[in-house]
Image (cartoon, rainbow, N blue to C red; front, side, top):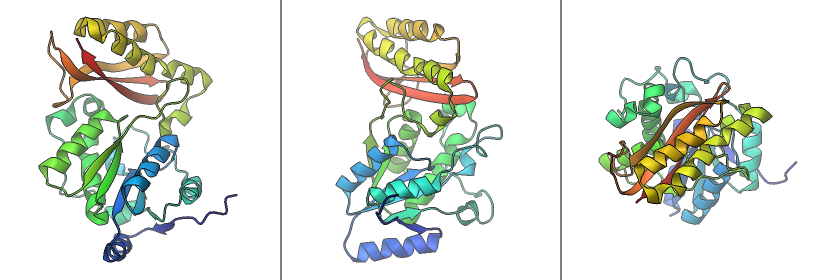
Length: 287
């Protein structure tokens, strides 16, 4: 058992605003790391970077129901608050904002929401209708409650990253987004709280996502067709992974690049392994 003091857990919006006001009055800067909990080494990278950015770190832990669809894993999403607080205490995080659903949505889902627009209906948004509207709305609420100078988001969720960055720009929200590179296990699998749902065979199969992205990146000098063929060839070799999509998107618009495209892009992939849905991505330059 660690002897490090645990973070102060703030469960109300009013309480969190009081903490923020106190820190602001003391002249300290704030960095927010929004999470759904079930923290892993990927989150650790966020919290470590936040320490370099600001005087005070706030980690939010909130499993937001409005970003989960009717047939998704809201009820079984891992909740490990005790372990999370232990880890954050060891890292010296002073505050955790952990509101209840009733605190964040006292009258049920808000009538006012933020629309992710057309991009929010593609890829993850096509499979998970309304997901990104829920993400953007809760992120806007968290930013309004904590008013940080910095906020960290991970590269692994590329579409989410694009949409949150666009929201911050479009709505003139005074916060700087810090992008944290994807953290991977030794076998290449991108860290995710959902990885714990995989058994040994499924975990082995799940590495096909990163393998396909590596194949795509290696083929990028040969053009878009070669990128797609390389990725599809890898994915077809793993029958235990049910492909949802593989696409190459424009980094500026997050829409599929046209035939003959050359330049910087992002390869994105999603697949279901057993009952677990996984996503991954990589940057590449199509020659």
